[in-house]
Image 1 (tube, each protein chain N blue to C red):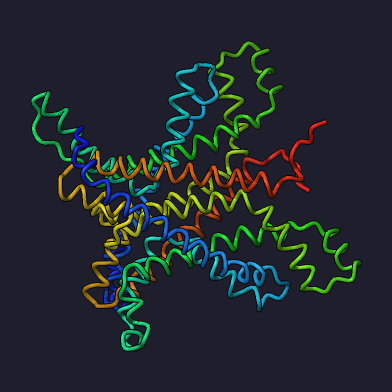
Image 2 (image 1 turned 135 degrees about the horizontal axis):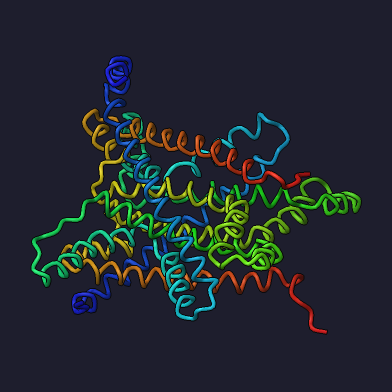
Length: 238
Length: 230
């Protein structure tokens, strides 16, 4: 496969398209998917905290979603990447550990996951509120524990309501991964800058990367539509 | 935490904030001016007419702003005729390039918001205008556009915040906006936490200011939806 691609794409963009740029695209996708997993976990936790009766949980979750959504992604990325590096080593120093280096990839995943966790929390909060109260009461009436009601009723029923917001968040998240090129991670934007510089064709390469982002968007659209269909089984549509 | 370096660099931050506000305001004005014709042509019934505006919206909403900015700032130099034309002084300037990228980006997002709002115009309103003898343009000016702006307002507020946050990318291509100021302070004093958190606080203040402003405007524009005192 690899050899075949090298062979057949050798003439494209001076041989830079494969493996150079497309490898960068793979990193973009990996980064986006890992961040998504983290964002979903944080988002679910955040939504539960926002809806809980515990005041402290409300305040923490409220502060998290407000602060994150009020500050630009790139500023947060620099706070977490540069500041996090410093903080880890101050803590490490006091424990007598050697210099710890946070990899750009790890910092990228944590930052993007942390940012989109806040957006996901809002999406999930709305979706959980959209689940009819009677369905949850029915679960309790059967003698289910709160955890069982959540995993068996609330969560599966809220997925349908969460999907449109989730889809939007995912598309924005995928585009936000482009920022990691600024902290030196070799995603497709970073690689386009290098290849474009060495061939003196920066526009061409940035344009190719833009089109590759459109490909990610288009493929995601198909997937999201499929998910929507699956989770809307049993809902009548006009 | 040592905020001494921040305090002594406060003028730099304030200058940066001014640049940020300036960039955002100009980009929003140009973007809105472009968005109205784009949205109107995108709602046409003729597929030949809708193709160009829809492609424009699709491209600028589907690709990262940073890539669009790089395409204009670093990419423009690739074209020999452009470099020799009278426009070159614009394209070699980071500030102008950021402004062009931001304007086109926000134009695409705003056009999509407006398109949705225009499509949602109740048909009765247009019929009412026609039956009063208004021409097509008069219906557009008196009924479709004002009501669409009203419907688009909440979504447009989000877009303005989005633009403010996107404008931080100007700091990446050497412009000293709020984020650029934070980068300078960090590189001079090596205080990553303090410098970027300070920028974050300023952005937070600007975000809240925008939210407050839109609440005010919505209060006026949505007066007819306000709960009436009995």
